[in-house]
Image (cartoon, rainbow, N blue to C red; front, side):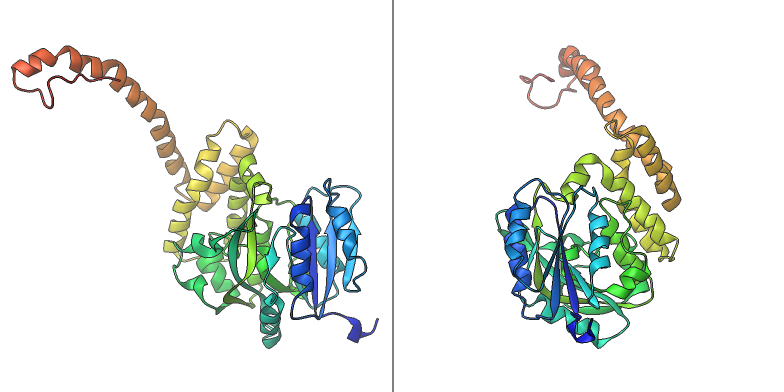
Length: 354
């Protein structure tokens, strides 16, 4: 193949049962003002009308279409499959339920071209409901880390970004906002297919840890859709999130040494993710034990935090039982005596009740 025929960007749309959102997603790619791209449409054996919708685009010369005959069961297997098929220097994984401003590639691609050390660049995102209602910026959830950092563009050293931010949380909030260098993605081994929820986080951290740069565009050019059938929603319901969260943090800690104050804050914050999971009877014991082992490897005070939390959960109903069954009846029984001695407070006509 002639090098002139190789597109600059490969856009991969991995789809599974997102027929409702597909046309808007695909059209938002095909209408990009930057047109030097190929579009790879992947379908993971959808059971809805996805395939018939995808087939509407077979006449476009920019489009390639690959249908799985068996569901892969993994978002990140589809990522790796798409990148393996890609020919472009850069890749944009445009998730099938999101959509984009038509200038996204126009804004992001030149940034990667301006510096060979840039491993990926990403932009600000809007939060959008299943009914296309915009509800603010997606990065509002990062305001506790830094209220202003993700409101405007910046460049950062990849390893330093991991030490300060990516170590404790995935600050690259949506894959659809990212354009990355295909060579670096392949260099780090692609996405970890054993992960369901945190594979994107680990991928961005792995690419950043190669020592390159990352760039951020403060203009919101991506629309991240929130709905109850997303991978995020499913993972939270099934209890997958806590275990993977700790697993990625532990993996990053093997590569970098964060500032101790930052590590302590992360340990305190991450306890709210895993603490209740370890005590939940809905999650298999073997999985809870694995979560606890990872937590102890990350946080030297993990057991102390867990015991304190468990005691508070157990003692609260006990304290209530004592108050209702013993203390309140005793106060009611001794009311006349306390009243005679002038020890009674409040309205004498009131009795303490449950």
